[in-house]
Length: 101
Length: 101
Image (cartoon, chains in turn blue, cyan):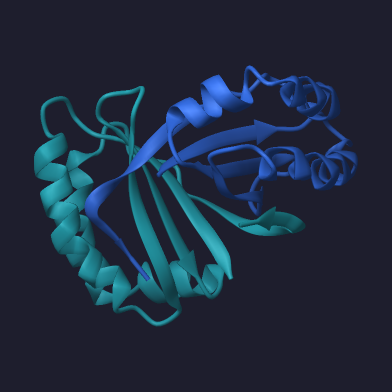
């Protein structure tokens, strides 16, 4: 399993509309092959900033599966116009033995 | 519950030593009041970069509890010398309805 992490900055005054659009858009990723889970986290210190975390089976499930799917166009139309600047997407793997709950 | 997210950049050539030190240090946070879980994630695209995610009952559990504890000094001694630059710590709360698995 890998983690996709995306720090998002939303255009001023559009946070509420973004959250509503995200609630609609999330059904798109949730239905993709290789999707595991996601969470949209709102920053407490910085108005209009979020952290999107999505867990996938592999980087390929995200980049080749989701990003090249017709559904990605729908996701893009719903969400991308809220972002300024356009975010940098990074992938992570958990460090062995580097976690607990 | 809140999420603490910390993007880390480790000094060149010290990633392996950092991971070993983290495996030791993690028992410190795991034992703090208000701690829920943590994960250390290694970036796949950028050598030497990590994302540390820690879940706490509240921001106060992290900032007033952990950061002002004697144990924090031990954490600092084990880990802070690996960071360059010193990281920005942000806190997040999950957007209502903004998550699934």
